[in-house]
Image 1 (cartoon, rainbow, N blue to C red):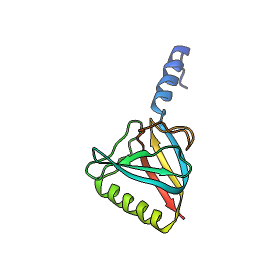
Image 2: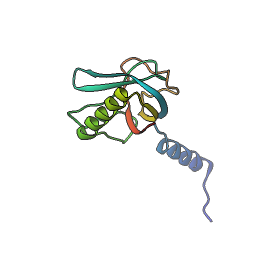
Image 3: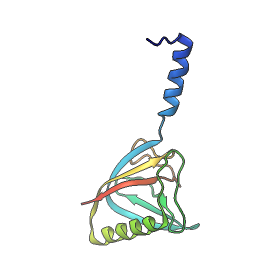
Amino acid sequence: MAYFSPKGMLSLAVLISSATSYANTVVCEGEIEILAYHANNNLMLKLSSMNVPVFFCSPDANWTVAGTDYQTGPNSCQTMYSTFLAAKLAGKRLASVYFDGDQVPDSCNGWGNWQKANIRYFVIN
């Protein structure tokens, strides 16, 4: 039977809590209100449930943000942009968009200006 001293238990608790700390995730939905390009080759998205547009990828480079290991490659970025544009033109709603990263707020209407996130998953109704 293993025995851990109080000091050892504290060290183990710190190790576990630091190993399992993740960036925030928020799931938003709604109509696409803004789909924008911003210089230095970054794309932005704002849904009706969001207060401001958010940078979500670059069509020229791998997109990474602090706080998540997810990446979006240039081809995936271009595909997402095309899909979002088609959904906007067809009047379709995004049923859920999972945003991940350190700059992700607790709610869809809590974004700060010029925030970056990774889109991990989305569904169109």
